[in-house]
Image (tube, rainbow, N blue to C red; front, side, top):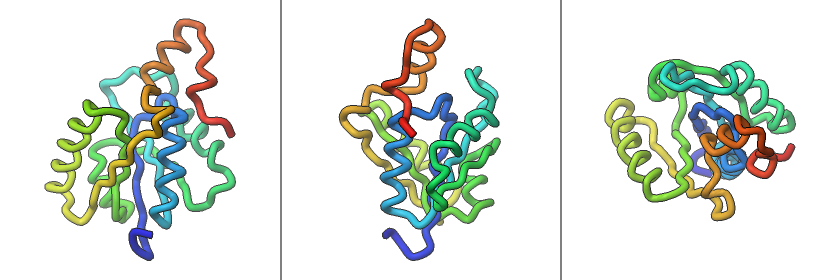
Length: 152
């Protein structure tokens, strides 16, 4: 345990919530008392699912895990963390490019909200290539993305 009253936020667009996201969430539960999966609304992205659909799909995956809740938010992730009283942010990292971006975001977040630390979890090797962009492309072109999505 990181501490006895830890609350982590795992934020993203999750369109869709991939097997990699599922793995990161399960691993984060080993480190934190509670986890909020925060579905961010990004006006610049045209998603396949509405935020409400994404929230419902993620909730369905974790119906038997009372320590996970799913919320929709808009605006800065640090503002959401402040609102819910988060102690940590959890982010998944698939490759060096992800690391560079996540490192910069973590530094900016730490400057804006010094009380919240970011924890970067490396993607499981077998899931490191899976991204929501790839899944959306497969689905838009009529393919099956079942192997990239979590199994309930």
